[in-house]
Every structure is written in structure tokens, then in C-alpha cells.
Length: 459
Ligand code: UDX
Image (tube, rainbow, N blue to C red; front, side, top):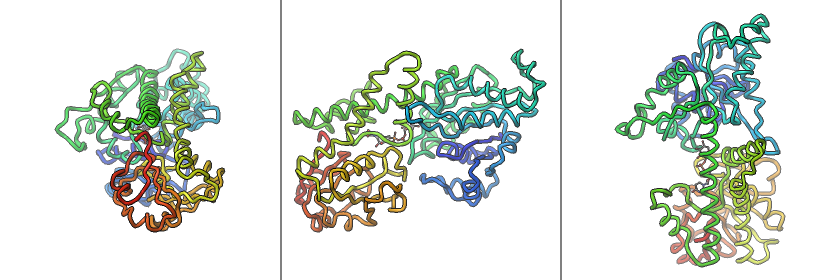
């Protein structure tokens, strides 16, 4: 099938490359010419395990190409994915201006032939119909004579298209794996023709031809109306974020009553109605999706006169959680002014170089405000990778330099390699061997036997 993916951000690039890998002819469009050039040379602008290899393979086989010309993409694709960014505005509302510009652009270039237009970007509920309207506006701007045909709900060329909402559930750091091993595929549309084309497009993935375990039954495909598909994405992310805030609240209570949240989470997770995943207490959630999507859902609810109290509480617990590490440092070190704190990890989670809404950023600011000196080490972040406002953090290139002279270490990101470190060597160069394990990730007994004072999160 001929596919055009508009926007080569996280979702767009992974979708384009994976669809090319399973045999479709893909063109990816981005208005950032530097990015297009980079991709044409087989370089990925994002860090994602396995992506560069697939990208290079698809370029070599001729299944994927990159361009900044939207017209070429629209003409080429039978299926057009809108995968541009939908960042949050300062008030939490979703900024849909990039989706709007793309939809208008699609309208301006629609010619003969039926097209399926897929909303992959996480857009506010109700956007599917809105995208359809904007596309039609784009058509009419180009061909005013068609305005009359539109009034009758026209379905003749170039108005022959359907909009499908196809939310994306991939996680950073395992985006390629998630694309080939989805838990479900959600397709929101009232058009049977469009749904059939989408099922064909995803056929090899549905049949698990590229899955880690090809013997599993086919991937469930849920067909819904447009708005429900859009809501599923928000509801799933809001639920997971709330689940984490819930276990963090339990962790804080555990701290006070002397219980261990790791054991509590295990005992809860064994209940099949609860499940063990997303019950890891710690510094809370960050990244590009949870914070943005939960705020957007709260905002949408408010627009319709509903006060989403539970979701607001999940956000508040998450914000407070980031500062609990500071309280723990104060309990152990008392005055933080003049003390040196070393952060193990900066990214919002392992296997990504993404610092968006990372708890580390709040920690750094607060420690700095309290007069502490902050050093950090992250496998994927260098000094130059930090935004200018964070120039007061010293990013070390190895853990021994990080630990040197520290009054405490704080594990911020659960990078697997932090479990393999020789902490005995680090203790020797620290001012005092204290470690706050912000993800309950390290071996308490082992560290204590090395002389560390270990403090977990409800653990
Ligand atoms: C998330 C969703 O999982 C994905 O389906 C959606 O498409 C995008 O948003 P992502 O942001 O990549 O994916 O990260 P995820 O692995 O879900 O983790 C989100 C945050 O929650 C991280 O900061 C992580 O450290 C934190 N987390 C996760 C916990 O604190 N505890 C847990 O038990 C799980």
C-alpha cells in the first residue's frame, strides 16, 4: 500500500519506518528540511532502540523516502497519517495548530482518488470531525466551485476521503517493539471502507508476523466511533498515570507506618483485577505524554462543565512526589546549603534521552534554590544536551567523578546499568555514603553492607 506519514516526530517516524519494514511504500513528510536531510542519510533524529537499523534497511530496499513537500506526499499516499505534534498550551489546553495546518494542506492538495486520512496525533476529543471540516476548507480555498457540492455532503473527487482516529500507545524506549507487539489496535471511524483499508494496512502486525511471539493469537482490533477512539487514548494514559500516583500515595503512607511499598505492590498486583504493572513507586511520572494528556483531559472536562477531581489529584500527587526526595535529603543531611548532591540519571525514564517534564529538572531547581551543588550522570545526556537554564548542573562523564565529594547520591532514573555499579568504589570517594533510591531500584542490603545509608520511597 502507498502510505504518507506527515510529521517525523516520535510517533510519525516510528510508524513510517515500521510500515515500510512490513512492505508498504512509505513517504514521510516534514517541514524541517534539516531533519529531512538527516533522515535521507539514514540518521535518526531521536534515540530509539532498533530504529536506525530499520530505517537504513528500508532506505536501502527503497521502501521509504523523505521529503518536505506535502503535495508530493498527499498525491502519493492512499493512506495519509497526520502525526504532527500537539503540545500543551500554558493553560493545559492542546495546541492543535500543527494538525490544522496539515489538514488544510491536505485539502489544498487533494486530487483524484479515495484517501484514508488517519489521525495519529493525540488530538482533543471531537477532532476527527473538525479535521474533516478543515480538509474541506482547504479544498474549497483551492476550488471555490466545489463549495456547492460540499453542502450535499459530497463524496465525489477530490472530496472522496474518510477520517480515521488511530491512537498510538507506543512507549519511548520500546517504540519499535510496541509497534510490532501491540496489545490492541483502535480504529475510530464510521466508514467501513476506511476500516477495511486500515485492517489491510496493519494486516502483518495484526497477524503477528513481526511479533516477538508469532504464535500468539491475532492482535485485537477495536472499531469504534471517532470520539470514542480519541477518548480511549486519553483514558488509558490518565488511568496509568493515576495508577502510579496511587501507588506513590501508598508509598508515602508506608513511609509513615513502617510498611514496605514494594511488598505491598506485589501483594496488590497478584490480584488479577489490579495487575502488577505500573505499580512501581518512586519519583513519579514525566515525559511527553502523561503530563500533557492528563492536563488536556482535565481541560476538556472543564470545557464541558465537569470538574475532573480524581485526575487533578493524580497530577498534584505527582508534583508533590518530586519534592519528597528533597525532604528525605533534609532528614538525613539537615542543611542542604553547601552540600554536594549527585544525581544518578536525568531522563524521565531509562532507554531514552528525553528530558521533557523529567522529575530531575524539578529536583535540580529546588536543590539549587536551597544552595546545594548539583552534579549528575546520565548514560544518554551530556552537558551540552541540557537546556541553558540548567547550566549550573555539572554533568559528569563517569560515576566515579559523579560520586567524588558527594554528600548524597540520588537515583533518579532506573537505568539498568545503575544496578551493576561497584558502589564500594563510589563510597570511597564520597564525602559521606548516603543514597536516596528514588525508584526503589537498588539492592538495599548490598548497599547497607558497603556502609551506605539507604533511603527508599516507602521502602
Ligand atoms: C506512555 C504510555 O505508556 C504510552 O502508552 C503512551 O503512548 C505514551 O505515554 P512513555 O511516556 O514513553 O509512554 O513512558 P512509560 O513507560 O509509560 O512511563 C511513563 C512515566 O511513568 C515514566 O516517568 C516512568 O518512570 C513512570 N513510571 C512508570 C513509574 O513511576 N512507575 C511505574 O510503575 C511505571
